[in-house]
Length: 395
Image (spheres, helix red, strand yellow):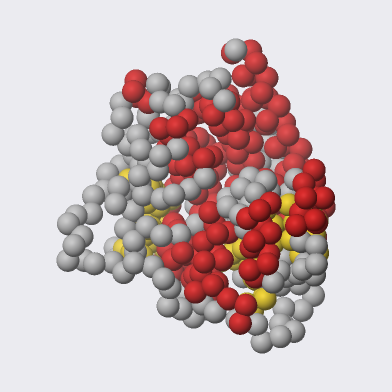
């Protein structure tokens, strides 16, 4: 499949358009010229059909897909007369990913985003990656597919995008360490006893960013940072012992790269997801973005401290997963999803999530590796099943 555009407009497909990544992507695209500049081969969402229809009409998308197969008739009816093709369910998501495009923004949360994103990779599209599970659950398979497809992998997470920006070309051999910054979430100053009593509502209140419920709780538990550690290993080809995490409450420095000569390069900016999204859309050029400029005169201080892995054991679990290798990342992620759902439902406490994940990782520490995507999905199912079983026994 050729990546050469058929028009002068840049083709961008968006998986997960109705979520925070998707909405911010469309905001950036509108600022950079909208339909005059961009063509949208495919756009997908899930339950928010009204928003998906509005986005499809706004962008003139060729194909709009809801992940929920039961909402197909509703979506098709709402798009009647627009000329926009409607689709629903997993097969339609994969078709959306396979549509000929220059750049695919992979913003679907969870392992559901893996196969549609791989469809775009196989077509040679560049990938603006915001889906953590592609690399956490299927890292070696995914990076091998990128190499075969010939597209570029452009990280959209602010931390990995920061590293991408300051990782000097032809200097990978000189990298000493990668330092991922973390806000610490709403519980960074809580005692462990106080954390044990928090609710999903308080866990969802991120101090610096506006994100979805599950992502916000992942930030509060630092499971998001655990996943980012595993992502960084695959994105930048570094050893697990070269990955550090530092708490930086202001979220102004998004991440850093330390070199063998002692230099540390950092990327700074106000907390705004449009920085990374705009960089991915405009790469290799930089475009003017509608984001607040950093005012150093008003920036009173920048604080840093080491995370307490007793209170945030997800970081330790990430290191264990990387050391064990194989499909331990998929196991960690699958178990975490089930534990997170149980916490949101009020079935377990906040700190119990990590206990469940650790137990599942130990139970499935059997040396399994991914020879195909089917192995990834099978391991994800196993991890979820074991986690569910442990939850039933503890009820």
